[in-house]
Image 1: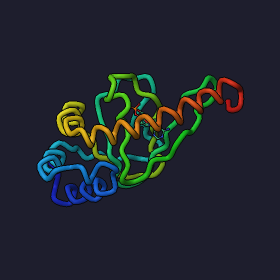
Image 2: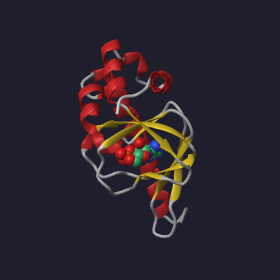
Image 3: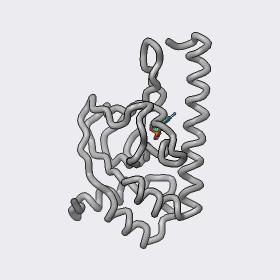
Length: 156
Ligand code: CMP
């Protein structure tokens, strides 16, 4: 379903805060506007499940989500993501399984892109692809460290 003018302005506001906004051409912005789907999210809702296959990229317009790594006993919170940030990029970049659980913590609106549009618009532009890969790399390092701490018994 196509977005309303209000939805489009909401997604543009979110995109303006995203690291790769400056690198987007007007044509790409328009393509993204056409590709996004709006998804109202509710506190407690699981948006991404660790270990599952990817398929969707997310940009948060409002509300917040928590990122959790599944442990043997407990899930460990590794990050909170707020408006103007993206997530779900890691599985799409390398066709990996989802690296973490992502759960809505504060009601809000998230916009989703299919893997196809992600590849067509985001990965086709080398500057944007590099910025997205950079974020994914940083997140991977944080998670590796958290995983090591967990294995060494510092966290459950
Ligand atoms: P993906 O692996 O596709 O699905 C889970 C998502 O959680 C992942 O992509 C990232 O977008 C996000 N994520 C994973 N680790 C972190 C982290 N350390 N900080 C912020 N977001 C993360």
